[in-house]
Amino acid sequence: MSTATARPGCRRCSGVALDLGSARTRARIGGPGVVLEGPTIAWPGAVRPVRRGAIVDTPGTSRVLERLLGDRLSGPRRPLVVVAVPALGGVAFRTEARTAVEVLRPRAVLTVPAARAVACAAGADPARTLLVVDAGAQLTEVVLLADGAVVDARCTVLGTDDLDDATTVMDLVEAVTGMVTAMLGQDRTSQTADALRRGPLLAGGGALRPGFADRLTDRLHAPVRPLPAPHTATVRGAAALLTAAHGHPSAGDEVHPAARPHQGRSGGSGGHEAAVPDRPR
Image (cartoon, rainbow, N blue to C red):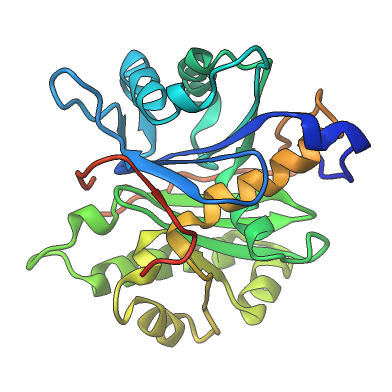
């Protein structure tokens, strides 16, 4: 999805930005405002329809979205929806996401890599290469962006939900370090090294874990940069891209022609739906 200045009529357009996380589903309607948040749990049965970065129950995901947004999208206008997706989610995630979002009666559904949304939330220069570390509840991604497109991506099915006495924050740090090391080893250009020297962006709930950013900085020998309110960075960036998408409603997500993503190997919280401010208390 290409970014561009929105057309004058955009302010009257309705739109929804979505981050379908394994533990929490977050949405932002329209432009600036609160992030709507609820547990990614479908009823009946307390089913978790999104697991480890994959949609495993599409009807259940639709029920989560209907519970979170159904009352807020009443009216004749059909929204444009932008969904942030894992870089390695592939066609399967995008297809299931588009199907699940049909419950919102969208006029169009666009998908964008979550790492690109994070970069947008950070106000990063899209012309420069960038490393994004997104540590979620059940999935952690490391993504290399160049000109706003995914050039390389790794993931591990390890997240904050897995941390306990046996699996520590340091295990997550080592997993991220391993993915970055693998990217450096396979990159025949200087893109990964350049992005690492500038400092990776850190997003996701993992960025809120005490000591995670500092330990990752020590292991990578690079200045890791946690985003403000990192747990909502993806949906905030998707909302910014939504504004741009109104200027180009036919645009979709893009993958750099030279991209060769790699699947890394390694090794939900409950609660009621709520509207929360961007900055955690």
